[in-house]
Length: 171
Image 1 (cartoon, rainbow, N blue to C red):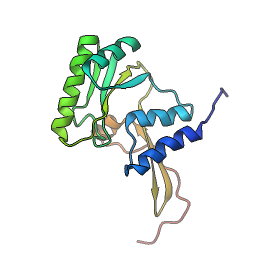
Image 2: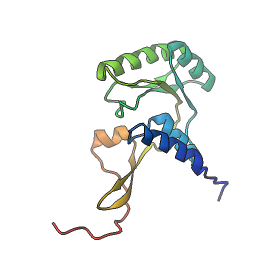
Image 3: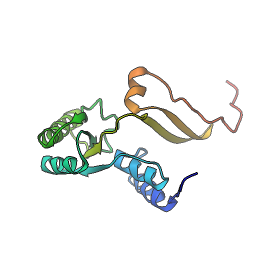
Image 4: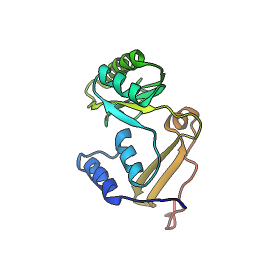
């Protein structure tokens, strides 16, 4: 087995911050920090606040890139028009930034929008979604399945649910 190093404190800081802000979902950059804390590889990425920054960051990581809205108020980025895939050059990155921000404001005018994520576009592999909740009946649950867009579009359910520790209450 490789060098798998867990930095729980780093993860706890992110999760505590989210909880203290009254949210129950992470933004993509927050999720990346948690993944890194547990040694899970993620694509290069950064958050920008202007078209010029988007051009510069995308150029520094190499094209093509994916750009996504970052907002705790917009969890379903694709539905909000907040994702642009295959950005091929600096001019496209600047335009994509402006388009994503405009779409997000149209989708939810009062959304808190810290910026736009510029992310390295990876070829191959499998994009997945991972979620966790604490349920009164079942305890801690973890969902694992195809990527978020595929989950919504194909109506598939997560492919792995932990077995409950307790018996189900009678109907």
